[in-house]
Structure formats: structure tokens, C-alpha cells
Length: 215
Image (cartoon, rainbow, N blue to C red):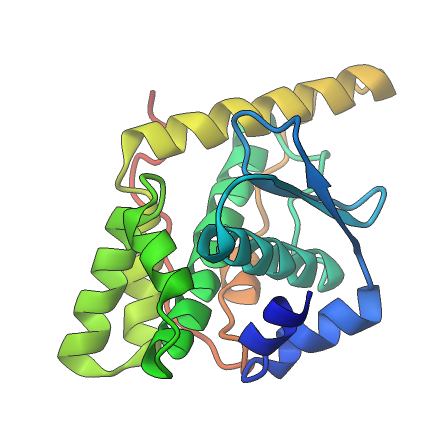
């Protein structure tokens, strides 16, 4: 927990939501596919054991961003059509990756390389880290680097497939428990502008990749 708080020292909005929401942070030996998740119903963050310090920190920061999203009411509703719900999940994941990379880049600039090295070598984030680093190195422009990383999230087929299956499975399970009728609502038009905020509250440009849900 001390390492997490130290990593977020320059990101007060993330520290604030951590302190105000006070999620339980739990270690698990049972996670297989997911490395970590935030569970709003129980207000807990669960992360896998055996990841190493850098990747553990990266996963915790990622889930703190999801906590921030949830606290701000920026989560897709079960009243949406299933594909629209998946669109929202994709965008939330892309945004959480952006913020994780920002934190890792800040730590790297101060000489702490663990989190950055974990993100640039983990298969599910390596390409995003490369794109973010290229843009930061070329321009030093944080919103531009954030936009590039957001866009890159959609570029890997296996990443989209993994999150599509997970999002739809969760959606169908909740619908079944609630005996809900099918819904056909669309994601709100302001979903992305509300979602894509840097930790300092400023916006960054984010756009859903064309054909993101084509399978």
C-alpha cells in the first residue's frame, strides 16, 4: 500500500478517490485470466499473487482508475444493448491503460523503472507502452501521448476479443440474475468526453476505433 501511495503522489485525484472510497485491496491465488479487477458491489480490488512488484503496482493503478471511473458515474449501464455495453468497457479499459502509463512514465522519469518495465514487457500492454513512449519522446505532449495510447488499445485483436468475451459474459450473467428483458439502448453520446480526462482534470482526445466490435 505504501508503494501505491508513493506512485500516486503526483496524481492527487487518484489518491483522493483511493482515500474517499477506501476499497479493500485483496491478494488472490485463484485468478487465472484476469490479473486484477475492481468489484463495485463489494468495493474491493483483487489482484493476483506472483506478479512481481512492477506489474502488481501497474495492476493496482489500473484498478484505481476504474475506481475513479465508477465514482464519477462513468460506467456503462446494464440498460444498454450488449454490444453497446461492450463498447463502453473497451473505452474504460483503454482509458485505464492511459492513466497507468502516465503514472509509470512519471515514476520512470524519477528513476523508478519497475512499473514501466512491467508495462512495456507484459504482452497485453507492451504495444501500448511503445506507442505512448514514442509520442512522449517525440513531442513531450501528454494529451497527445494519451490519445495515442487510447487508440493503440484497440489495435490488438486478442485484447479486444478477451475483453469482449468477458464483458458480454458479465452482462449476460447479470441480466439472467435480474431476469431482465433485452435492451437496445445506445451508449450516451457524451460517454467518451466524460471518460477521457487526465488525472489533473483536463481532457485528452479519444476516439473509438472504427470496427472495434467486428468479429
